[in-house]
Image (tube, rainbow, N blue to C red; front, side):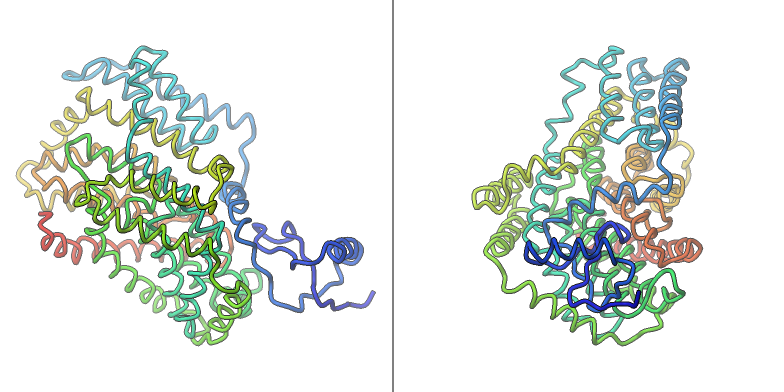
Length: 543
C-alpha cells in the first residue's frame, strides 16, 4: 500500500512517549472519520505538519504518568511486601535497642517510628502518603503520642501555605497562562540556542513562586515545549541527533528547575519541612526572608549555569531563529489573553505583594494565599471540583503534615538537643565557619544516597542544623544554607528528585554525561551560593 499524506494527520497520545501529543481539534464528524481511517491505515501515514501541543486542561493528566515514567520497573506485589517488611523491621529493631544515656524512652521510640517512616518513603512499598499514614498510626497505637499530638501537624500554617500554592498553581495550568509565559520568553530570547535555554529557565523562575511542584513546572510546562523544539530541529534521542540541540535543552531545563526551587519557599513542596524544622529550633524563616536571601545567588546561578552547560556540553546548532518563530506561531494560535488569564495575573501580583510586604501589613503568607485562592474561586477561574481533583496538594498535605509533626516532637522530646551536644564535640577547636562549610558539603553530597528531597530533609536537616548551632554558627545563616542546599543537591543524579527521571527518561542525555554534568554543576552552585551568596548574606546582616 503506497504512503498517503493527509492534511490533518492523527496520532494518538498513547502512540508517543508520555502522551504529550494529541490529535488536532476536528469537528465531531471528521474526528470520528479520522479515528476510523487511522485504525485501518495508521502505519502508512507520514507526519506532514508540526505536532500539536496538549491543551492546557490536559497537563495535569500528564503528571499522573510521570510517576510511572520515573520507575523503569514496577514493583511486584511480592517486592512491595518485602519492602514493607524491611520498613517495619527497621523500626522494630531501633525500638528494641536500649535508648542511649540521656535520651528519654519516648524520644527513642519516636525516633524509631520516624526512621521507619523515612525508610518507607525511600523504599516505596506504597505511595508516600500511605507510608505517612502508617507512621501516624504507629505513633498513637504504641502510646508514643496522644491522638491530639499525632494530628497536630495538620494545623501547621506553613504546610497550608504550600497546599494553597498547589491549588493556585492549577490556575496557571488550567488557564494556559503558564505556557503563554514560556512562549513569550521563547519568542523574546529564542533566536540562539543559549538564549533558548535562558528562556526556559526564565519561564521556570516566573512560575516558581506559585507552582510548588517541581515536576509540574519541569514536566508539564517546560518539557513539552523543549521536546517539541528539539524535534522541530531534527534532534531526537534514538537516531544519534540528541546532541544537535535536545540534550543541551534537557539538561539546561533540569538544572534551572532546581535553582528556581531553591529561590522561593513555595517553589518546592518539601521546603516548608525545612522551615518548620528550623522553627522548632527557634529560627523563623518567612517567605520574604527566604526569597531575599536567595535572590542574588539564585539569579547568578541562573545566568552562569546555562552558560557553563553551553560551553561544556555544546549543542551542534547554535542559531535558532525558527524557535522564535515557532513561539510566535503558538502565541498566535492561543489568541489574545483571556479573561481568566488576566485574573490569574492580577491574583499573582496580589499574592507577591502580600508575600513581600506581609510583615508590614501584618498579613501572614498563608492568609495571603487564602485570599488569592478565594479570588480564583469567586471569579470561577477555579471551581471546587478543581480543588478536589488536585491530588498532589492533598497527597503533600498528608505526608508533609506527618513528617513535620514527627520532626517537631523529636525536638520537643529532647533528641535533637542530645544529638547536637554529642556531635558538636567532634568539631571542637574548629571555627564555626569552616565547620559549617564541612557540614554543608557533607549534607550536600550525601544526596547521592537519596532518591527524594523529602527523605533527605527528613533524615538529616534538623540534625545537621542542630550541630551547626552547637558549633556557634549564626542560626539564620545555617538554616538558610542547608535549606538552599536541600534543593541544589538534586543536580547530581538521574534519580534524586521528581523531574530527574522524567527528563532523563526522554533519552537525550546518556547516564555518564548526566552524572558528569551534575557533579560539575554541583561545584558551580556551591561556589556561587557559599561564595557570592555569603557576601550577599553579609550585606543583609544574616551573619
